Length: 122
Image (tube, rainbow, N blue to C red; front, side):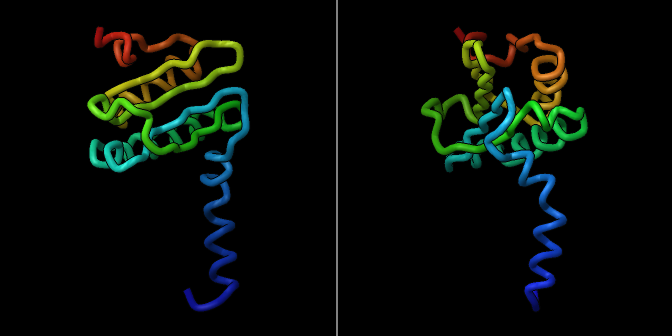
């Protein structure tokens, strides 16, 4: 980066991805990005949610964000989904492929993918 113009160009190119992660919308997808989550593969999970939400045209309703430790390190990568008026859903041992399915079935279709939830481990 050699100038403010280059920095501005980078900012403009990244606006869509950053806006997608802003804390807005009716639904929040929160990916645990503490050291344990990152070590378990949370970065590709976060990227898959960001890309899938955008490609499905859900970015006006769904905000994808990150947080620190969620507290269940043995089940990382962990993703929590908060929807207005509904109980939080906690997805565990997530992968990028599972994230795409959660976007399709849960965020788009309204059906929790029970087999990926923390409740499925009990």
